[in-house]
Image 1 (cartoon, rainbow, N blue to C red):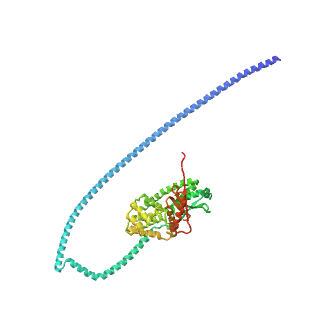
Image 2: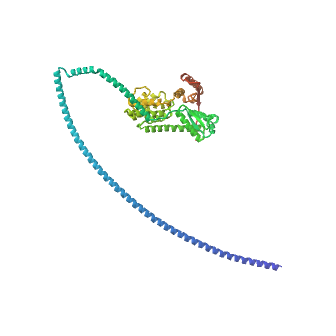
Image 3: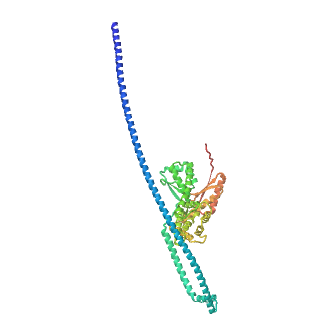
Length: 522
């Protein structure tokens, strides 16, 4: 049994050893085959890479040759073009030299002719002077002979003759004078009507009407709550800073900005629109946007004034005057926009001055500046006539402009055709139907007077009339006015308004004192 086991184990061992060598031999043969295949593939890839490299070199050489050909061709064309231009330039120079020589010859010939004419003229003048002297001598001799025959001097005969003629012709002369006076009046009236008709028919202005409110569109009514803010903080900051009355009612997707001051209302409207677009409606952001819009409006009014002066073609004007002209867009007189009225007067005055033989450019300049003082009445004391004349004198405007400023309100006599044209144009612009509204102007005067009364007190920074003039908001300097003085100031302003202003109902006076401490953490 044991022998059989040993024999089976030996056979198994021998079989394993033989199988191991056989498998090793087979694996070695397969490896050699793989190596040969890999070498063959590597040779194939190397040959393909070599072929690709050769083709790339050939392609590069071909491209280089083509580029050289293009370069040579372009170079030849450039040389040919340069040569043609040089020839053309030389030809032009030669033509210019010939033209210059011909012109010089013509000028020399003309100079010689003028010199000869001058000599002839001087000779003729000397001859004429001699003849005139001989003529005067002959006349004197004839007069002496006549005086000797008549027994009286020349002056005595002339006086007697004129006296007789005057006696016979007095009635006829008076009739002729009356007839020509009547004819002159009729002709003057007809000419004036013709000039006015020509001016008004050649200029068609729009009807002017300024409202006291601006409409701001909202995408949704949810924005109304954001504009009001928590406990009304945002709308209070808006009204205090902008100096307008913001009306938020049931009107869908809209709020109203109300103020009699067009400039202030325009800034407030633009500020609200930018805040709505931005979405961040809070006091700090309101102040930032308001400052940005105010700066933009200051630069905008200057550019508008420059455009208007350039459009009218009236010459050079001081930048401060052009800035005031741009500010007239935000000023109204009896409901009529001041800038529209000014442009209308300028155009009409230029047309009428041209018809009457005056200077149309000077008339347009005087018409453009005749109401310039209205741009200053919101910020300075005095009427717009004196303010306008003062600012025009400061910037060296001519006397015709100053005369037109005073004369269109009857404070001076009219001294020129241009001034008369401005006065007539001002009356035409103001008197046409629908141009002005007296009720609105009286309201604006009352509101302006209320603001002026509040601003005249010491320590007041800003004063705004809101709620259609039924409330005045006074912002004071916290370092100059304490709480007790603010109460006293409110009482004084209210008392002064009662004494100086006529108004319906009552006016609420709000004195606001705010103290801020600002510091930056860096």
